[in-house]
Length: 120
Length: 108
Image (cartoon, rainbow over all chains, first blue to last red; front, side, top):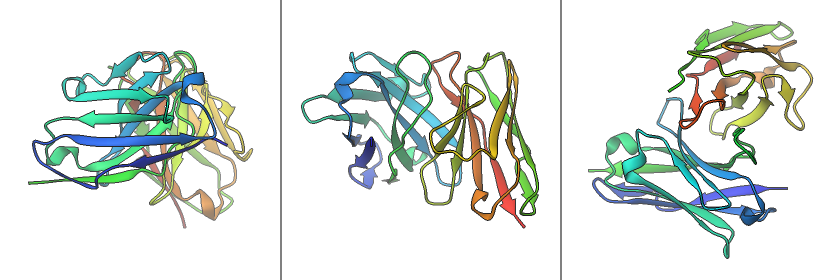
């Protein structure tokens, strides 16, 4: 079955760039679907960060758009998230997930999540 | 941006009770609504999409209904393993995709 696994540094300094990778197994990311990033601040709800389609087309949350880049690496079957100029407010558990094929985007399955702490 | 509002914030019930969770959208999202279950320390799990279609492997005691701006997730007979936070998410008008604030279900 399709499985996703986030990886990357658990600690990032304020003003630097957060970089995470989501490795997908059991499905080729070039075969379809949107692939997305969602985060959850400690004790809070879910916030959508952005999606990338197999075609490379991206959509971002307007609140984060100026700082976020999502890209695909089809040769390694993974997609990545880069978020620049991070602050303490970016401390969260970051999840990657598979979205829908068309414009109907619900997320299933999800990775287990990775905690990223921004330190001053 | 479509704002999703969930109620109640917390629901406490006995095993075997029927639980009704509500999700309201600030404008119509047609039937483009999903429900997720999140247990402590775990990632969210898809329960329902298209407002009423159960995802693969989801028990029949979970059901979704509604369209437009008012949606309901019903758990027909609560079990201890249903203790979790439940989120709704709209995907009718995006970006951005938006989630509700969650309803915490506690089993007495």
